[in-house]
Image 1 (tube, helix red, strand yellow):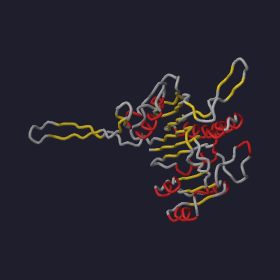
Image 2: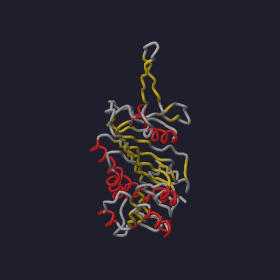
Image 3: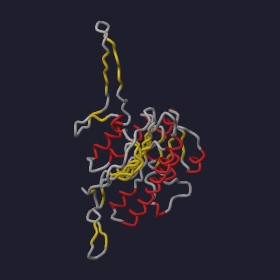
Image 4: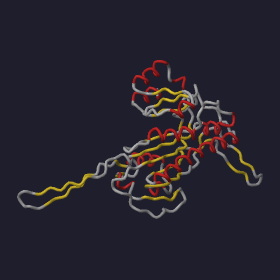
Length: 295
C-alpha cells in the first residue's frame, strides 16, 4: 500500500488523515525507523522532531465547514509546520494536499467546494509568504483535472454542475519565483513533473584536459539532465533555473523579466497542486497537493 511505501522509502514527513491504514505493526515499524508519531495538533505545534508521522484522522479530514475537532490541524497549519520541520541548508521537498476539494466536486456541492478551495488558498499564502522571505523559492499551483464540469448559465445568472466525475476542462497553472517562466503558457501535465524532476538533476560539469603530446587543451561538458518524454528535449538544472523571476506567471501571462541566480544558490521549490488523494487515504479521491523542494 501507499502507507507502507511511505515508511519503506523513509519519507521524512507524513501528515494527514488515513490513520486506520497505519495499523499497529506499521506504526511500530515507523517508530523503529526513527519517526515521531503525532496524533494531536498541540503536539505537532510543539515538536522539534525532524522525522514525523502525523495521523490526525482515521479516514478523511472533515470538510472545514462541518468543523474540525479541536486538536486537528488545518492544511495551512500543516503546511507551515512542514516547512519549519524540513527547512535546512541542504534543501528539502514537501508535498501537501487539500483532499476534499475533489470530493465536493464529485458531490456537486458548490458551497463545500468553495470552502475547501479557500482553505487551500490559505496554504498557498503560507507557501508564498515563505517564498517571498526566502527569495530563492519557486511556487507552482496547478491541477491534474477538474471535477464536476462546473458551468455558468449567463441567462439565468447561475452556476451548475454537468457531471459527478472528472472532466477534460483545462486547468490553471501558476508559478512564482526562481524559474517561474518555465511553467507559463499551455503545457501538457506530464511536462510539469519532468521540469520539477529536473530541479534535482546535477548541473552540467565541465572538464578540461591537456593533451600531453600536442599540448592543446580540450574542454568537455557533461549534461546529466533528463529527457522530456513528450518533446524529447533535455531538461537540466541550469536550463530550468536560469532566472530569478519574482513575478507570478500563468497560462495566459507573459514571461516576466528574468535575472540570473547565484550559481551556488540553494533552490527551494514549493509546488501547490490540485491533484489526487495521497495524504487523505480514506477518501482515495483526487484533490490538492503542495510540494516543497529545496536543493
